[in-house]
Image (cartoon, rainbow, N blue to C red; front, side, top):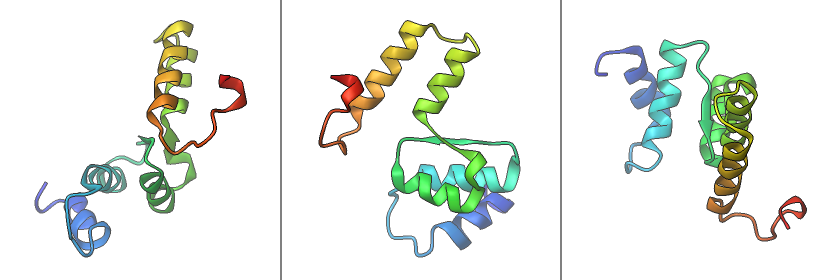
Length: 105
């Protein structure tokens, strides 16, 4: 990646100042999408990464995992049962919700 446009975006813009490797993967994905693929969509469950990607890539290029699961189901790449299982697992993995959503009770 050294010497590429994505490398410059990553280390001259997104990673200033570089203090740790926290969020490195998300930053790499955003830099790559900016430099290499106008049609790339960042799929994330990380809220900080989503906000950064929204700012850098624009609203049509950021999605939550729930959106990906729905697209896979709608394109018949996964079954309705698999879709439900993925949504439930994604919801359970997010510890930020203090109250279980009404639809999940």
